[in-house]
Length: 188
Image 1: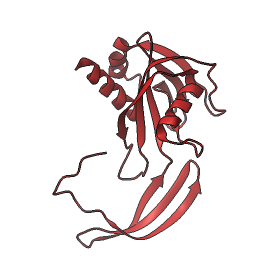
Image 2: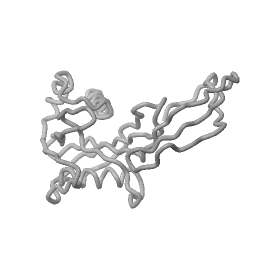
Image 3: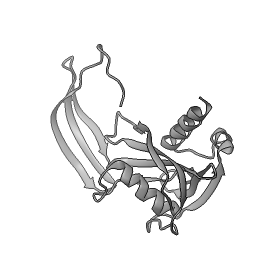
Image 4: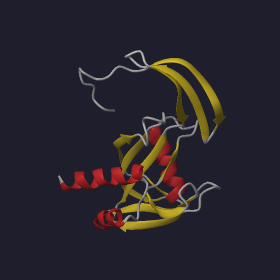
């Protein structure tokens, strides 16, 4: 994660914490916190999620696997990189990424490395999104997305990714940032 500096602010002290909802996709707690300067915030709301995983998957032909799907929260259809949440059966976040890639695209294998770790909103959410770069992935089986997923696989040449981002074809910031980092790494 981010490096520490000698003048970093101190963490807040949690005086009390109450869960308002404990559902798989909607876990919310309300904390009463005290800041280092003594200020007490009586209600600070935090949404909790399991860790998320994203994969920038590059085929042996040098193309990027993208999916298009409808997202009910925003009411939109857009391009995304393969992604999902961790399961209790996943031994680690990289294994979860491999599982998600195989489920959503049918691709697997290749050389895997961590690309970046992000937070959608560190002020209001506890979760981190772990993004992996998977280079040299190949088709291994038919895609088998979950019952709540209706995906369309698109295999996109790398040189088209920047234009897709520029046009707004991707709106998920936790997917755009890793793709931009991938493109920057390729230019170096």
